[in-house]
Image (cartoon, rainbow, N blue to C red; front, side, top):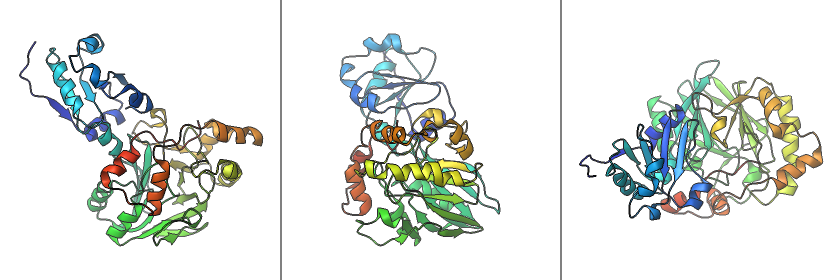
Length: 378
């Protein structure tokens, strides 16, 4: 059956909005099954099936009975080329609402969606940038025309757009720790805006560039708002959390909504378990339970709020997060050293990039980051 209908495409930005809005979606992923099993688009109301491109070169007859007749079909591949071919094949079978996802999973991995978390007490706001394809979370705090960004991703344009839109002067750029699962854009963003770039010194022993230290108890003014640093080791030896406006607790990769941070990405699992336990079971316990926890990552779509944001009150996490309810120290040690997912892709190369030791080309940086984040204990 032929068709003259032009192929329709959808941007990852528009697809992300549909996922965040929990729309009913059907996705055909044409990557190799091993890549699909490792990492795929997920959502509350998403049905996603996998049929590798190489199996569809001669036609789509093998999957016709799996394709819905009465809803849109979104076809995705690794980079956006194979999905166009497959989408056209499906349209030739009489399906009309078929879309190829522009840029494929590579583009999906790089999309950042800004979501307003809330207002600050003396004016200003805090925004969360959700990197929906990788589970990375970063933050913009703005008050009185001044701004700070925490845990910047390497894709800078979404931050630049917000800075321009709200007429913000960026003064502080901070990383909670030396990241191992994604490349930090913090130093580059700070240089572009003549802002200060900060890093915990215990994570910076091998960095090749100048930076400003983040030490326990340091305070950073952003307009009328204060960001206070709290040393919270365990994921790394330098991991530092931030309390913003006495309302929000940015936990980096120490505490997530549904899990806790892993201590092994620098090869120090056994050494850092005690630090991790002290942070989670003592340091954080001293903080106000009504602080809204804003982590640097999330693991799954089940952690997403109705508006697409990722957050929960600290007191609720002490009631619900299994990683915060392991009273026996030996059991805790076993949990965080034995229940670990595979290391993040290219994690050592990413660490060295964030130290300034290597400077990969942009395409290589993309390849290094492909795949899910794996910063949590299972």
